[in-house]
Image 1 (cartoon, rainbow over the protein chains, first blue to last red):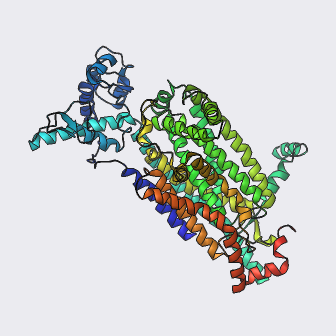
Image 2: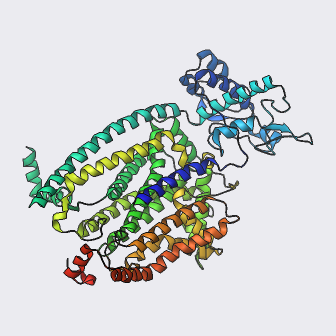
Image 3: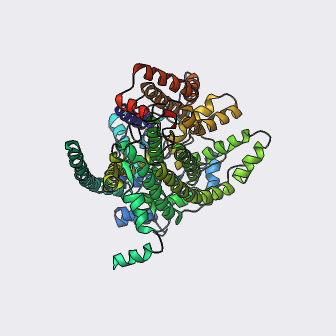
Length: 225
Length: 410
């Protein structure tokens, strides 16, 4: 059964790797940030720019305050709406349909809802370019109705480009948080759980060995007879 | 005091004698390897799925307008809701990993052979029930893949001759997958685990009648059996620890591995995803479905591929006891079959284009050929092994009693 064990682990690896390579065009990899200032910058851009058209219907202003953003910052974002209200789009469904012919997707889960996850969001934000016919399009979503929100198309200056890349990274970081707000808590708890299980399993192993050792003594006695 | 209470119970209910006979003193072969841990693990996974499922059901809403939001409510607002949900969604995959290994062990060591046919068949029924539960549970988050997976799979029943359309309508409760489908799948997804528990009890009764097989395949003498407790309780709990470590790595660090990106998009009957793909545990069967160009033929082949394991006790005609331990040809067949299933899984996960089409067909052919060839191969192998000379322990076994009736006399 040694071979079976190897087969099994090979198979597991296969599934792990298989998932990562499913997307079409190679995405730019992004290192999302989990520190508060980056998330706050990202939230700023998302709420100022993205929510002109998009909503984040699973995120309430209360959640942003709970994350640890400054009170007056959250205050400025929410305006007159109560803490318990969700981040709505500033555009009505009718005007969206009129402008784009489609309703822009909700962004709460967007970092999970696309093949490639955060890398897709990041690549898409920076993927705009002007086609030869002058129309704006995107490397990762040809024919998208979304305008070049960050204004990356046509930027040639390296310093300015780096600035926009930073902005895209912050937006992506915030959206990654929004898609799975308990991720940090989950991982922290995970280390404790795994640590506890390692300890417990080690003890169980020695317990098992000790119990089975009795069997060897019995067997040896039988051989002597 | 406690002994008096137990005494009181024992006069009315065989508590002590039952625990003694079926658990603590239950005779178990001493040479079981760690591959024998997976039955216990499957039981553990079942209990965990039921426990997490009941708490998820307290917050979930089976309504097409609320289902997706209610899952997000669980993930975001309920205390440790994310943990319950990830335990449950990862647990579904873990369940299949465990029962597939449990089945592979049964195949490798020939544990399905007489007198364990009923044990094997009740296991088959368990697998079918688990598959049905998993399929219905997958609809509940009401994401795109949930919806389209259910749409495609229920549609397959349309291949039933004459009454196909009516069967599909009956399953869905509507002309397309919708609210009626969601509510009935939810009701059945809550019912099925308890049917599984009942079937597990039957599986255990069968097991305790015929007792565990062992790696050698030879029925052991009484002196080679050891009491289940404390030997196998300690071994099972150590195995459980290892299992939990691996499981928790996935739950806490890789929970999205088993959730399709498409399923984070709410179900939309008007937008078909580019590539509809079932969960990984159905992929080999899905590949068999697609390997046959005709729809009815494909459905029949897929159904057959799941239930064909039931013929194994008859198909294996060797007089050499057990599985791969004494039978090199059987061992080769086992590995060919496992590799073949992995190939089918890969083919099932890809769009059916290019060389993958013939590859899937060849793999499907090998899949069924294994079962069809087994009666002849096992017989030929038997003759070859006997001509070559059997090891002394088998020699002794056959001298003791005629091979055909060796288990009937027990």
